[in-house]
Image (tube, rainbow over all chains, first blue to last red; front, side, top):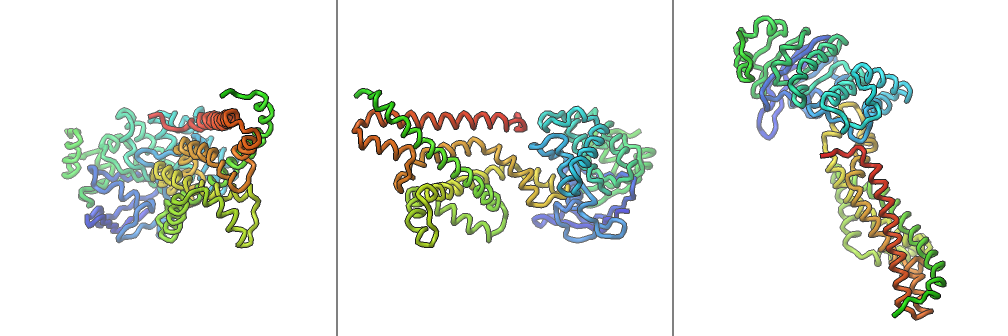
Length: 238
Length: 221
């Protein structure tokens, strides 16, 4: 169980996150929704130790979250441009998890096959399409077998038609009993994701509304802030 | 004002020998300069005042003083400290030190150009700072600044003629010796120009071939 408790963060005297508390169990997808600048990415960066929090605690199964138990799929993927598709995955396996070359390669090949990239193993990142980069970024993150996987705006760099595909990927990650945390402003992604989980609507660094994914799928119209947010995104509720 | 072909044939073996010494000085100095320059350039990008201050001082002193003085320093002053160096190795040490100062700043620019996103991507996978530098940042930085490194190599090749002042029989020194004996300034200068041009063209071609090999992953923007 992931327990994010009372996280606050101030940058240049401006509050970015205020008293954020989020809970998630393995197999759940947590959506952190909000406009640009709401603090979604900062929350993910704090979870991944890329930013320091001012206050609050982050615990996984009752213990302080270990850096190695969590990873992040970046908005622009941040794939290693000097490495091949295969090496992007094997690097951390060999250098961080100290697996031997064959073992690391086997794990990578399995992931490449799962993410339909096996024929691109020797290609460099610049030669991949947006969808392939997204799949590689997820495969690279999964290779280290994290308990918590964070995705920052997973649909923003992709064609809108791929939103449904990403929703399926999120469902797959949940099936693997990962805790999946997604920062997004893409409401279609939330609506397309059929999994257990919770949506936290963030506004100016504060959680203004919380609802289960089930509630959102059944009757989002009853949620005041979410309804306004969806209208802002051009989604009309019946 | 004509080229003396007889002198050309006589001088060729001596000049070829000198060109070989010039090549050795340049290649060894450049390799050492790259090694220290990459380390210094990387350390310079870390926000550590205890590292930045001495590196800035080193770079300022080396770039602010002539290479000629640095070569004579290694030949005449360093032995007073108990380290005896042959003219060849004194020249190599001085040119490598000079080159490391320039290369450190080239590499520093390259590291900044790689961008922090690559570093963060490696951090979330659990790589250490040294591993991030070794496997991600420095390989990309070297590719980014490769043309500047080629420029530095070509400059070193020409500057290696300064080794002649401490008696190293490199290309310029061999040519001067032939000039002193033959008094045929035109033929010797012509040959010297051909040799230097040949060396710079040869290495430029090699580096261009390497650059083409390295460019596989450079973004086509």
